[in-house]
Image 1: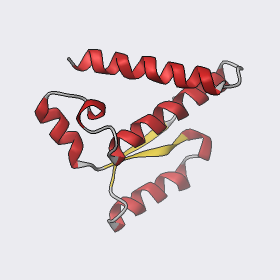
Image 2 (image 1 turned 30 degrees about the vertical axis):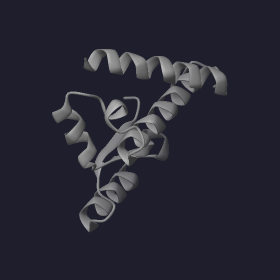
Image 3 (image 1 turned 45 degrees about the vertical axis):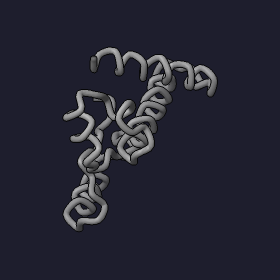
Image 4 (image 1 turned 90 degrees about the vertical axis):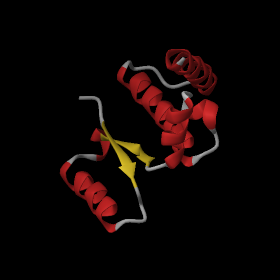
Length: 106
């Protein structure tokens, strides 16, 4: 297992906060991604429009969370491979992966 991803997070609700808290009590910090994917109606709207969240509205919290997750995932992978993440390389890889996601969504 690489790490757990907490998604469908609605920080406004007590149950969502409790569930996220419970996971952090059971799993170590290095077993859970710091980035959590929030509940966001823009996901549904993008799906209905037949586009990705990045094409539909790249500035909503859900899109920002996925970009943060991509950065975090790349950093974890680089650490596992024994290489320090180079900011320029991370940015280049993120752009490449985002283009790949857009192409797959078409």
